Length: 268
Image (cartoon, rainbow, N blue to C red; front, side):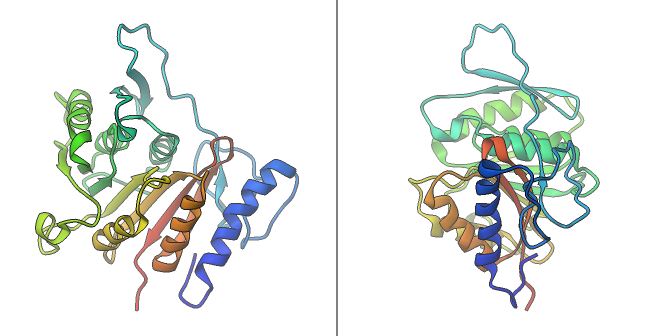
């Protein structure tokens, strides 16, 4: 856990980079609790006795199907078949590795992160896969993204949650850093969980994204962020997150370079 008394960025970023290096150089090296456990055995759940991030493999939840539509993918989470329509026209309309990692983690760690009857906000929801999984797990979900992505997002969420006993999810426009107080007034909107996957990529400006996370993360809120670490932009945003929140690396998926982090508001 990062605290105000520790140099937040240097420790956690070194763990992320050490894990990446350790996976390339050796699988036999062990580290203490302040470093990543690169040699940990792959597990199906996210439990860790040492307090270090668990090392996981992305499970093959994708189900191959013969389909007339090349842009539809089939997944199975929490006993439900989920059909996702993708679009090559928008980056936000494709299922990225972070969404698979967080969906798998939420499914496997329901006791640690119980979403039943909790209020959940997903920012940058994209195709809606994570929001759909959160709905299946019993959450009141608000899935948000840019206006040009909402049509496909709404289609996927409606298609996979209608005629069920799930709480009816909501789909809303959210442009990071813009009109937050007007569209989501703090007196009305409070979320137990903020979910974000693969929201960092080279084209975006990081400050509005961070401002959005800060706005919605209040005392008692848990931010779960999964991202594929490939570019300098990813590490720059990790630094910003670690300097702003109490941050813990929950799990790593080395074969896809995905890190899953938990962040909470620092208490004064």
